[in-house]
Length: 123
Image 1 (cartoon, rainbow, N blue to C red):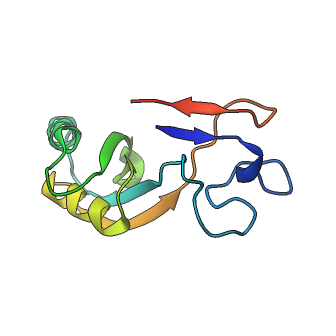
Image 2 (cartoon, one colour):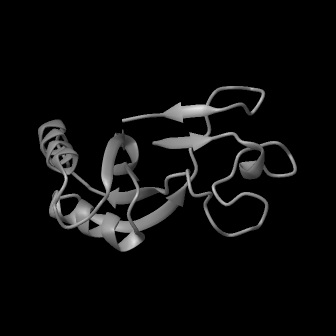
């Protein structure tokens, strides 16, 4: 489960951040989110769907959970969102699924609640 919006995770401007106010650690009930940046020239919709299905099945090797992907065809880029695990786990999960991961980026989900209230993602 991913949660954003409690007082401990809001910066001075009221915008939620994964690391809170400079503490550098995630609250214990907040899941780590990572984006696998995959430069993938020439990928077809079928290839991407198959890789996403493999990523969605996961692996016994790590605790990562694949949440989906954004495909930017004009940039030949696929951004895959993973929850939990570590950067290394996300890289391995991406590559095991056939996604050409070039970089793993710590990610913060920002919901549409303008008051900075709680946004929940339960899977």
